[in-house]
Length: 118
Image 1: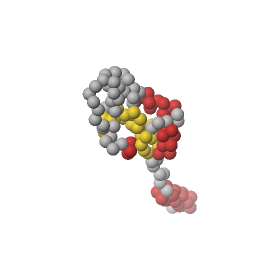
Image 2: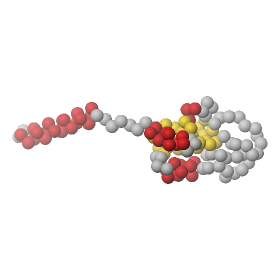
Image 3: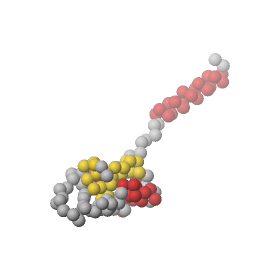
Image 4: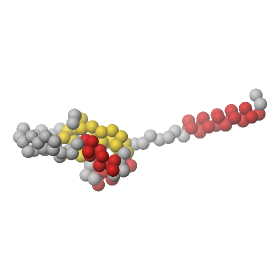
């Protein structure tokens, strides 16, 4: 091997160890929720998962994933009461304080939370 090839090999090996020893830390995420505001016997009431996601995006909050859920509480089978449906979003933990100011809460605070369909 000539000198240039040996130098190049040394640079490549050094670069490999720098990258291997200093991996990029993954972004920590947290799941938050907000009630849809939907009312039983009132189809179309409340804020959809997509619409609420758009509000987060317009506020500069990156939504990593989204799904609907339920607070898990038992409700009377009558019209005009809250359905307990929730919009749930996975966001960067660094955005938690911002979304709390927007009325969102951490999913882990819900005792009877159940993932569900929209």
